[in-house]
Image (cartoon, rainbow, N blue to C red):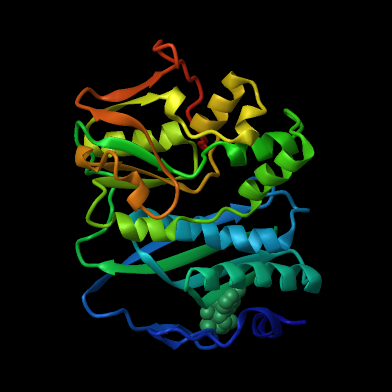
Length: 314
Ligand code: ADP
Ligand code: MG
């Protein structure tokens, strides 16, 4: 099978969706953004041996590639629209490609995005996706708007994906049912698109947690010129995390990464109104005027965190 047959067989599916004038098959896609909307554009790469293992389920890889990019759109409050896939394959493996494409299209459809184009080359297994979304002009959720007194909030349960990875790497073992849940969080994250849309006009800042809660919160603090206090006792927990020693669970929650949950700040008047937001949201701390991130253990003592998250070049 040649390059063009491959594209046609696996990635040229009838793509419907307002705004897609011309999709896969010509030199460029033609897109028509909605009037009054700004485009939010993001790209993420996944490399074999770095972001995934070569024998990972290709359906999960297709899912996760879309999910991690859509998560960036969610963190800006954008509605997902168009995707572009850059695929580098060592060889044509039909079973692998069919499963990868199914995972990718299923996750794209779930969030209302269509595959509008891409590029296909031969080489060591790697893929990248560029995702475009739309939001009303001027309403993007940036990292830079957090103010002293704001509530620091997080969606879902950060740390479960890291528990899944540590289980897989044999660093600790989880009981069978809990392992399945943690591995699902690692391999099939569900980006918080609906929450991101609901936060427009409410949140003062937002980011998605890809590299670790403490490190990603650090990006908000730096961009906003503020600090924060986070109480470990308020971090959302779960049977997966409760099955681990406290210190290990905290490290997964604070520095694990791969969560694709939203971390955001809300003005204090939102306290007590968290249940109005779509999806589980927990207040974990508060923004302070003094720069820096202060982590408080349940007894009120400072919690030392040597490693705050993932950095490819650190
Ligand atoms: P060109 O050589 O002009 O860059 P290509 O042969 O790379 O064109 O691509 C032909 C068409 O197929 C384009 O519309 C491109 O966007 C699309 N395409 C190529 N690879 C992929 C892919 N992996 N997924 C989706 N669309 C793809
Ligand atoms: Mg090309």
